[in-house]
Amino acid sequence: MKKVLCDINFILDIFLKREPFYRSAAEVFRKIEERELKGYLCSLSFPTLFYLLTKELNREKALKTLEKIRIVFSVAPVDEKVIDMSLVSDFRDFEDAVQYYSAIHAKADCVITRNKADYRDNRIPVLAPDEFLALLEE
Image (cartoon, rainbow, N blue to C red):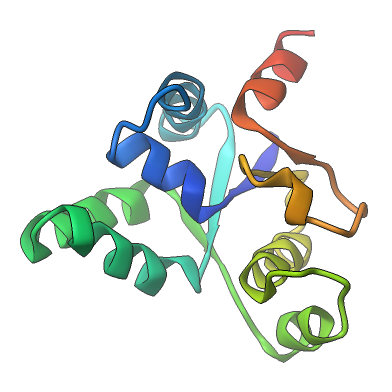
């Protein structure tokens, strides 16, 4: 089974129904929910998602959303190794570096994001949701 780490924008596209990104992200989410894929979120994503979701939803809805996300996704840990690798990386965005190295640490097959340009390492593929779905169809 393919293991994928999804980034924060992927989750926000789904739960805030951001077009034109919603459909492909929702399809990947469905595959994770139905256990066709093993989905991970970086542990760092949960507090960040809570903060961002409460800007759009009330606190209770944000917590319910995170509960659903946690049921569907496994948590990729952030430990000293992930932080150390992120600190010396060439990533412009430290949060992206932490998510990427968390994916490597979890042995994910790829990272799914719309923000591909900020990912500087090529140990595992970084794909947009629509690109990932196209690869699954091949």
